[in-house]
Length: 163
Image (cartoon, rainbow, N blue to C red; front, side):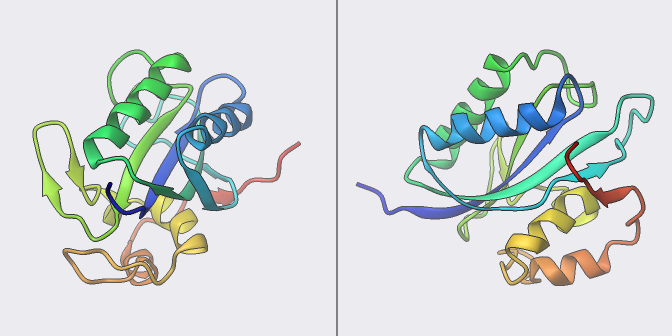
């Protein structure tokens, strides 16, 4: 049996009731693993296709025995169950990204860990720094806090107050 690993996920939603979508994704993840810390919710501008609605984003810590591929399969299954269809860059009810998986470094055709773009994205680093400022990127050896401080584009990420 494999050991339980600490993993950090990024979740985002920009279709439907965004907060309910985040809550449902956490509930579904919690059926298969223990949820640790969860960040505040952040209202963020979309990247790339800027004509789509704004996102709500969170980061969460989970404890899992699933392999990286098993976790990816679970995440994609939850996205599909919640109605995500279409390609990256399109509006979606939920997006679940594996940011850090222990100190694992891997690259396959379907999965790269750590997430290859996390160091460029304030909408990932701001919530992640809230719950894991001292987590270390296994390639760059920077802490999440250091990566967040190095990101040039910080506009468009606001703590969200639920209504």
